Image (tube, rainbow, N blue to C red; front, top):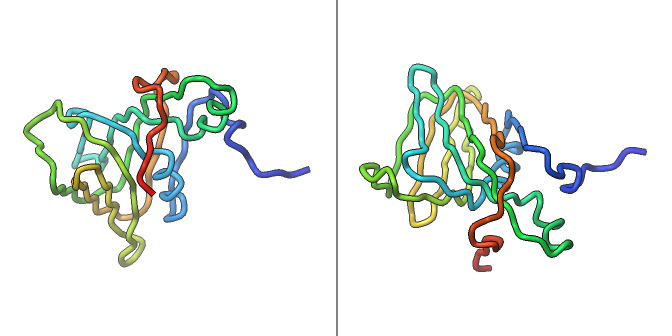
Length: 159
């Protein structure tokens, strides 16, 4: 019998997801929402056409199990890497302070011509990072074991 995958199917296993289309970007955005990272954890390698972030990602996929079992919420260190990037720009960021902590709210993809397009990473506090890319080629990969979220709470957003 076939059934849809559930969050519980992921259990403690690290995520390793690849986005190759706009719908995939929506999934990665939901899993990376509320990730926090210092400015120093942003890497832009123009010669490799790669833009990457080392995030402290809230484990949204674990939320139902944590709530059901009454245990602490978790975060995990994860790499969010965008390949085939041709240009990076930002607004509302003080790039001179490597210790400033940023919070990722969403990732969107706006297609342009011939499969190319633009990613927009929206940050809390009116900051944004724009990436021009030849195509959607993004990986979200957990790189550590989960740890208890310092706040012990799930992020909340006004409705």
